[in-house]
Image (cartoon, rainbow, N blue to C red; front, side):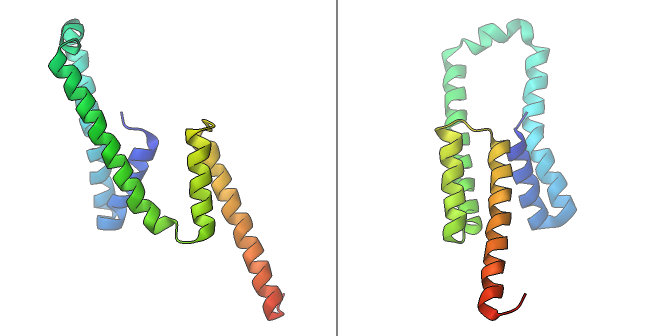
Length: 136
């Protein structure tokens, strides 16, 4: 079953494109293929080992994984262009990437940290603007 990030991304994109119907369609589109594959695997568990050891099946899985990686990278680039619209946002994105890929920090903690950093950044920016304009 797809991960929470894939499902959430699909639902957000579906919502932006077509509202509630788009979100539901995107959610179903994100989980249905995995559920169908799992159901087929469970139905044929006795023959699964022989099937998975076939070179053609192994090659197909490798290609599917490569295609999924390309799709994730493409979506990441598109989201990055829209979301990282300031040097601070780019810094958060780069630090999150380094934290997850090098230091193996859980995405949950990266999201919590990004929320905290965004809040602190906004508070500091607002305080600086108030000081410049002389209002409290």
